[in-house]
Amino acid sequence: MFASVVFFSVGLLVAGTATAMPLFVAGRLIHGLGGGGLTVSLYVIVARVYPPRLHPRIFAGFAAAWVVPSLIGPLIAGLLAETVGWRWVFLGVVALVVLAMLMVVPAMRGVHGPDDEADLPPRDLGRIGWAVLVAAAVLVLTLSAEATGPVQWILPPLAAAVAIVAIRPLLPRRTLRAARGLPSVILTRSLVAGTFFAAEVYVPLLLVTQYGMSAALAGLALTAAGLSWAAASWAQGRFEGISNGTAAWLGALGLSIAIGSLIATAALHLPPAVVVVGWAFAGAGMGVLYPRLGVLTLEYSSRDDQGFNSSALSIADSIGSAISLAATAIVFAALGAAAGGAVPFVGAFAFTGVLCALAWMVGPRILRR
Image (cartoon, one colour):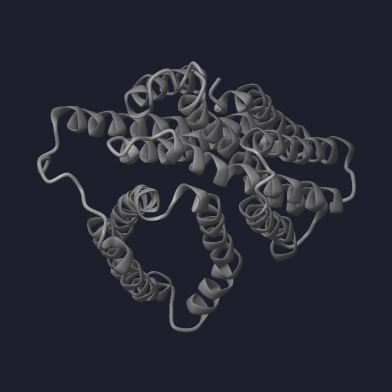
């Protein structure tokens, strides 16, 4: 936890004081390393400090902690950039990080790691190598959206195959085969994250290019989803009658309604209000399902593998989103993004619909027999 905060803060300082783009990118890399470590360590602390009956409420709190900054953060960042300068968008966060860390320290006093494993075992060192290979493959997949000629058809499947092979050691066994219990929890997280975040990128783009809306007005759809996400997260943490199986069903249903509304709007040029309302269903579905996947991950974990399973959940989240974003970009470009029109949007949203259908199939398997 302490090491992650140090990486996170150093990355912010490097990005905020950068004088060239390579240095800025390096700062973002360090910042990301810290952010990934923070997520995993927070999950483990929740598992060891709070009783299981409170986990749904804690993860609902995590959702609020993500949604609120996403609503007010862009406004604050814009004001800082226009007044004192863009660098303080990064440098100002360092003070908030230190303040948050001081609040967490009392809860960490009873949390201890294994004293007899000061050095990383060879297995963990190998996983670091696999993680680097996954990141490289996803990067190549993302850049292939800009490729031309035969490369644009050869590179994407090759990079995707490398990413799938390299990610296996970073996940619980039989995750890619959707085995019941924890493996399906991890896979479901990857599928719903890929569905939501890949489609979300094209929501404001659709409203701006096809309906002539301003960027600020188009952002209302994202705001609606953020608010519904927070509300649904609060509800699932307060009402114990929402079972994990029901949460999986509601999550897939919310995403299905949202993707269906996006495809229909793009294809039939429906009123933009359909997008705003439909995308709010996506936020509600994610708000119900996302916290429950975190709760189940801890429930299916022993003390020895809480860290590994929490990191697998985070990896599935980020890699699923990254691969889906790259894939939708390839589909969008292949269907004639440069020429404009509704067809590229329909294709991109249809691809996320395929991911949503897979989430329907895997979702019921998050429960053990």
